[in-house]
Each structure stands twice: as structure tokens, then as C-alpha cells.
Image (cartoon, rainbow over the protein chains, first blue to last red):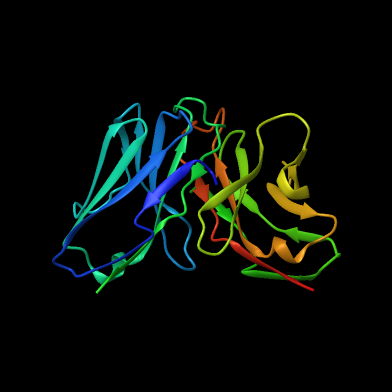
Length: 115
Length: 117
């Protein structure tokens, strides 16, 4: 295990539902990330938080809303998603930003299916 | 544009044979380079990284990678493949000094390594 957990592991939701993904890291890191992984495509960085502050939003649609209440927890709130949003959503953490050679540690992901 | 290329969607190798998974990059400045592995239904696991210094980097599970600045490559290698090495491998790069250093990791599309017994 990498020290990063994600729940739920699988989620099926309709386009009108509201759901949330949760990520927790037990590594003492201060930076956390959300990625989207779709088949045959590079990982897409969605959001970056450093010491609870959002530092990057990679032009993500507003139907995805992140929340970082503290350095150990990260949420992704989902609302009125589209079928093309079906993917594996990965959370990662690393030591604080500023040292760009720090590797990231990934959770197992949430497999999201939007019907 | 800054990018990472993994030219092979899949690499097949017999157990016990050496393996190579290719990666080339295009970034400005001196890059930081990473390899990650993803097993089925799991997240990405860090294997190794190149920051500076010796061009040959050793990582987890007997893997190593060689940084070649002139060829802008960072190929992943292992002298003797195991069936348990079968997984999806991702190369990633982050621009370092002189390249507008950023914490954004740029990933390749991944290479599926299949090791036959």
C-alpha cells in the first residue's frame, strides 16, 4: 500500500446525481492532487492543493468541485456529470510544492461510471 | 509544447529475458524524469526517478533507467523479466531548472508490459 486511500473504489451514478469521492493520505504530505485516467490517454491533472490551498485548476468543468479541508483529506464533489466523465479518478499526494523532484504517491482510484 | 512519448502500446517479452520500455520527452530546461507502474485495479506506484548526477538510475523491483540527454530519452530496463512484472508502465517528466520549473507532471500514455512464462 502507498499510504493513500480512496473511497469508494467503484461508483455508478446517473447524470442527475450528486456524489463525492474521498481521498486520505497518511504520509504527512502537504500537497494533494486529483487526476483523471481514461483509456489510451495520458493522465489528466485536474486539481492541485498545497497546504489546503488550491494552486491549480486545469480547466476542469464546474460539475467537478474539489474540497481540501486539511492536508490529509481531499474530496471531489460530483454534480450533473456526463457519460464522458466515466473514468478512473486517482488521488495523489507529495511533499509540499516547491521541490519539483518530489515523487507523488497514488491511491488505488475510484472507478466512476456515469449512466 | 512539452510532452512525453511512449512509442509502444505494448511490449512482449519472455520470462528471464531482458526488457526495455521506451520513453522520450520534449521539455525545456533540465527535466526531472519518473517511471511509475500500475497493476490492475491499483493506482500508480513510483518506481524510480532521475534528478541529476549519474545517468543510470536504479529503482524498485530490479528496474533501472538510463537518462540520455542527447537523445532526450529515459528508457526503463530490467536484466531479467518476471511474469509478475506484467503491468502498465508510465513515464512522466517535470520541467526542472531553466525550463520554467513547475510541479505539474506530464505523463505518457503508458506501455503495457506482458511477460510470458
